[in-house]
Length: 86
Image (cartoon, rainbow, N blue to C red; front, side):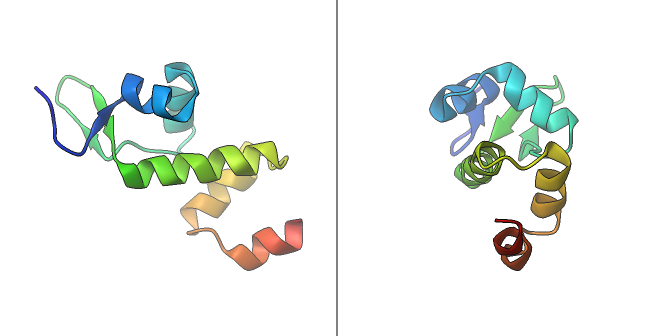
């Protein structure tokens, strides 16, 4: 069954140029949670999640630790904190 506006983990990973394993890892680390999880456990993501993933990948590229990234994404990314860190 296809869900309009939602992407499977595989589709989402391909769009972002990362592996499904990376998507699952970010989920387990509470950095990027899926927008919808079916009873079967299948995870689905939205365009909004894609924007979040791009932010996560950028912060990782800039050298932030996963703990820092988790704190920033949970807190809604306090950009003053980010600016001061750069």
